[in-house]
Image 1 (cartoon, rainbow, N blue to C red):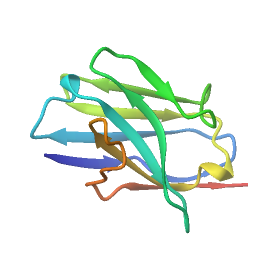
Image 2 (tube, rainbow, N blue to C red):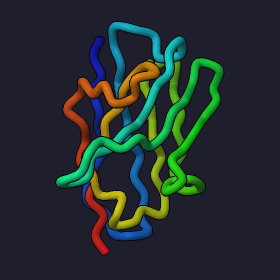
Image 3 (cartoon, rainbow, N blue to C red):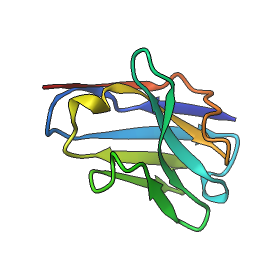
Image 4 (cartoon, rainbow, N blue to C red):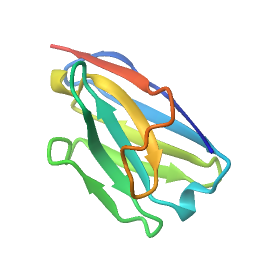
Length: 114
């Protein structure tokens, strides 16, 4: 199982980014997939989940701004982030399964300036 995140960067508040998570070794459509994040000096925080039945859930702090999706053909998970805020600054990781804090990838840094 391998998960490789990309797409992070530096944006101004109000900007947008789309994160990608390329998966290998398993089929992302058959498992729960999550996005989690870790801000400097803080623990891992759950952000969003998509189930094998396409049920999507979001942390209250990102509802209406972030959208989780997946491309089964590319075996890739996405997180579209709009209206970014400075408090969204963190390293973002994708994880698989119900244990959403089982981080295995390197993550991608998102920095939002005010």
